[in-house]
Length: 181
Image 1: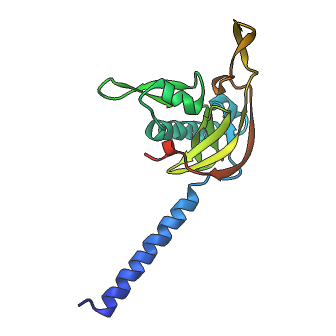
Image 2: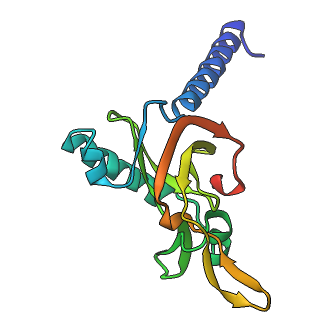
């Protein structure tokens, strides 16, 4: 039989662990003051060089470790748009496909994360199993690819060729099936 003091200690440990997990989940959300940067030079217009270098490196390491991946380009492009997925290679030299890192989000302090674009131009940041909408990429108009019988053949615009970025306060959205590894 377990003593009362041991049971109380076990309950306290379980509660402390649960509180720790809840607090860790809160830290996953991008700060509302975080800003999107397409690249390092764009960051330099707002923050000092060491801050930008750290943020861009941290976002790229996060991308390398946590980007969602698919076995085929077609599967990836279904979620992220035409021309918006690139091959990556496993140690076995077998390719797999990940969405392009469109840029990164940084608050100029400790937060940095890669930004992805869905096929419709919605900008997303993945934080563990949580997904946040952080803005919208302005897409160019669809491309007329030619004419078929009595109709134009139009290719939708791809997020890979966005013309501008409209930021917003980060908003959590339902998890995507690809955001959980």
